[in-house]
Image (cartoon, rainbow, N blue to C red; front, side):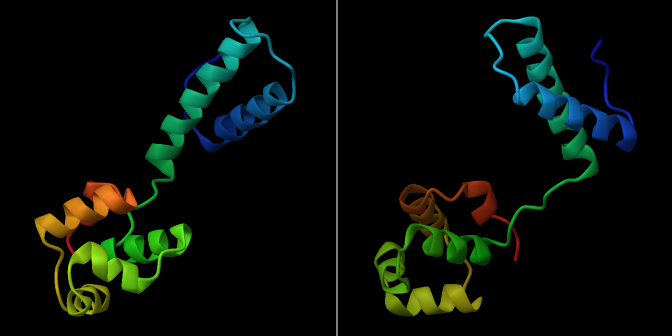
Length: 119
């Protein structure tokens, strides 16, 4: 029977059981498949509470996304509107405007909630 995860020992057991289930060729809508789904939800919730991952710094998120997408900083200038703005933004001398946040969200698919964080 699947129960809520209340401590690290139960968390480790849930991870082991999840791993075991993932190694099987489970039929959709089977009892084992349902167990895997419920365990995954419980593990995610436990991790969100006990091992939260902080949101990244807006500038670090921009740099990471540029690297990830293979976009040069000169292309970022085109997105932001001016070369000097790009330099000021990346150096932290200038804050992102609402228009910049919208463009970065649209072009680079960086979540707006990351870009609007205080820095």
